[in-house]
Length: 236
Ligand code: ADP
Ligand code: MG
Image (tube, rainbow, N blue to C red):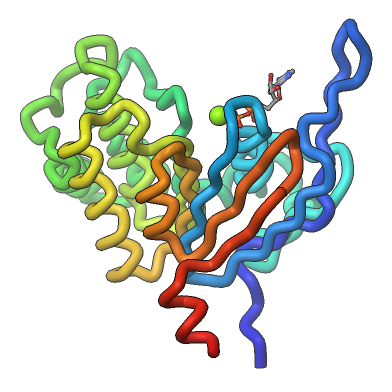
């Protein structure tokens, strides 16, 4: 029996109004991801990658099409239910991090844990910061951190509650090669240990190839979908 897919997007369209007329940002995207899979999303700047991630997170509502995540149709959920669902199931690393400027690195990482009612929120957050190599930056505010350090805090925050799904927008985009490798290893280790489903937007071909599947977006459409070699062989 085929397992129920953890992410199912059907014929997603997103059209925004502008002074120059409607802009078609997504133009019929279908995507199905099974639990525990990793998907690399690639494509040129402006092709709709970040927008697609927002839709998977229920942060942006498509003009048409259906979004089903862990068996829930997001379009049928109210704001509060959606916020709770997201908090309990999805970790998000935004392209521009979205850290809270008035909170320290440690506090930023601890928020999702506190919201989840975790009594050990701060010690768990400390362990997550340590895992991304930032134990010594715990008391620093985002403005005191480099772009790469903020990115690692954002990842520690996204992973703090062991989400079923990790959505990450260019998670290594601001990191030097060596730090990038450490962060990729960290994500894939968690994926192996916890079975985390990961959707990674990336410009790094090597990172995309590490994923089970690769999706290429161009101009709001999926123009190619490939499966890594080991997967393809295993499926034969
Ligand atoms: P990518 O992440 O692949 O670079 P985005 O998803 O950020 O692409 O954007 C896709 C297209 O949608 C771009 O042309 C961008 O300018 C446009 N866009 C994104 N968000 C908005 C918005 N809120 N209003 C108008 N246009 C937007
Ligand atoms: Mg983007």
